[in-house]
Length: 97
Image 1 (tube, rainbow, N blue to C red):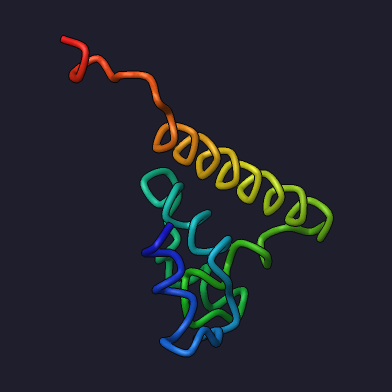
Image 2: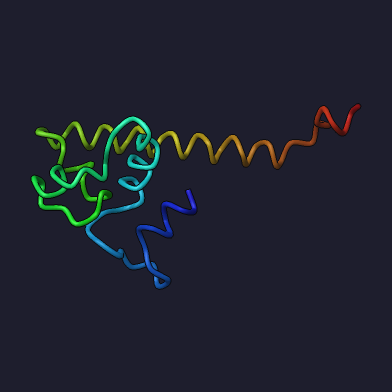
């Protein structure tokens, strides 16, 4: 997650390019299954960076919106689980044994 923000925003919190951290997460999560660096694909969608591609690949903007919501929900769920684990008062397996 931190790496996604680093790639999407500068030190002042301003967007570096025309993509956001959700686009970075989509690319990073799927780069082993999809060739985001394909020069012809980048040229066809008039992209400079592979992180610009996710929203442009969908014919229907609502589909990209749904994917973005799913990525966001995943991150929120992960963050909540980590928070609960840190605040847990029960002993972990290593502490107990």
